[in-house]
Each structure stands twice: as structure tokens, then as C-alpha cells.
Image 1 (cartoon, helix red, strand yellow):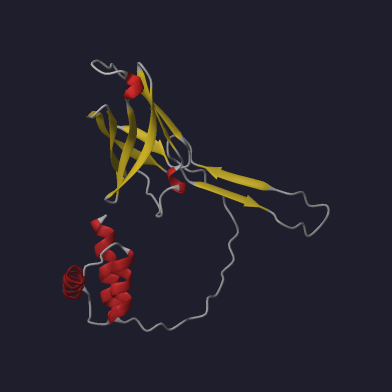
Image 2 (cartoon, helix red, strand yellow):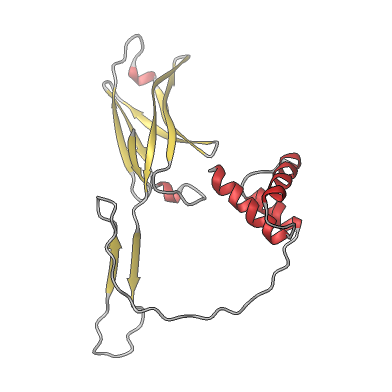
Length: 196
């Protein structure tokens, strides 16, 4: 299983042996399956290797990717009326913790500008530093949750079929503490978290 850091481009070289066809006639792509969608990245076919360049996935995907997620992948090559699938495998996602902080404005000319970066160590441990925290009070906002909000949430998670939405709603109503739409919405959110 190959590791794939979503914050970096990845170049993968496949060693290949081709017979019965000239490599110059071949074209292909590396395909990665994520949430039922295939993302294809064009490959460069040479006489003894195939090179795939995968861009930073954080710029390609429309959702957050969790550390340790696995994606199925395959190498497809075609040309002169032939379709070849010389490699199938999977990637495990590496999503290191990153944080950058910059002072945008100096309050005193004597105070230097500071740039701070926190990165996860290769072992996966994160350095911790004691930081003074100030409590910020948030105003309470009363939002009335309705079934429409619940259905909109399901659509945002990719469930567009009204019959499937209704089945999920009924199942989650049975599992929620009360029939209050807020509790039902919590149950639906919990359903989608356990699903992925």
C-alpha cells in the first residue's frame, strides 16, 4: 500500500515490460476512486516505465481528507485498440497537522515579527506548547430545525434519492432520544459519521 500526503505532489514510477505493441502508441492514466468518483491523472508512457504525477489532493478534492483513509487506485493504459490494466492497488492518506501563525501588525516598533509553524513529527506525534487562552463568549442563537434542514443535510452528504432520505430519516427517528428535530438531526449526523 502506497502512502499519499495530500499536501504534496506525488510522482510514482512503475517499471513495465511491454511486448506486442510499441510503447509510443500507448496512452494512459492513474485513476483513484474517492467517494464513488474516479479522479484520473494522465501518465507518461516510456519504453521501460510509466510515470504518474499526482497533484496535491487537497487542491483537487472538495472535502476534508482524514489521516489513514484508504483509496483504491488502478493504472490504465490503452492504444491501438487495446485496453490494459497493469496495476491495481490502494493509497493510504497522510494528512500531517500543520499550523502557521503570523503577526500581521506590530503594536510596538520594538516587537519583532514572528512566524510560528507546528508540524507533526514523522512518528505522528505533535509538539505541544502551552498557550494562554482567553474565553470568548458567543451570543446564543436560537435556530428552529425542521425536516427540511435534515433533508438538506442528507443532500449535502450525497443522498439525493427521496426514498433513501425517507428511510434514513425513519431509522434515525427510531434511534434519536426524542422526536425533536434537533435530536433527529444529531442522529442523522451520527449515522453519516459511522457510515464513512
